[in-house]
Image (cartoon, rainbow, N blue to C red; front, side):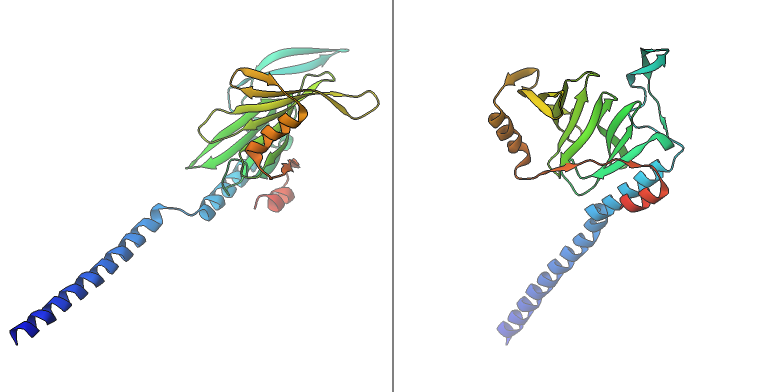
Length: 241
């Protein structure tokens, strides 16, 4: 009789510990959920911040305080001078969204043709600039969630460069490789150099080696072209989503 009572108590104790463990797991899961906002909610927050930014009367396309080159035409000549940038009129700004830096939270590309452009993202409660360039640069495309971004850099003359950058949060932008290009007099483009970059080192390679190296970073992902939109209410409603 005594042994039977002991067995009943033992089974009851095991059952209690089992259900207690289940209960603790559920409690921990409930406590952890608010501390880990979903990517969907982070995306919604970012889009809301982008709309609010584009609704302002003045918008910082580049990081504030950056010194860029400006020009003005006097007679038949252009006068160039240094200018400290702060903001642009909202009516001059164009925008585009794209998932560039590796997650599902879109990044915001802002452009003012007279000053340059910037690639911005909103994460962890603040705006961060992943890349910026003065008006000598033009955003061309990106590789979806691969962190690879392409721009063309112009010199004001016929030659220009196609440049591929690696963009990551919290890290300095990294120039991966570039092509030296030139417009042909009868139309089309001639590529006259292929260069791989490693820090400050440059290495000239063949066309095949150049694109093989690019594939290391982009895989089979094709480049998504960047189309900049005028900052209008209709475009914000259509594209900021």
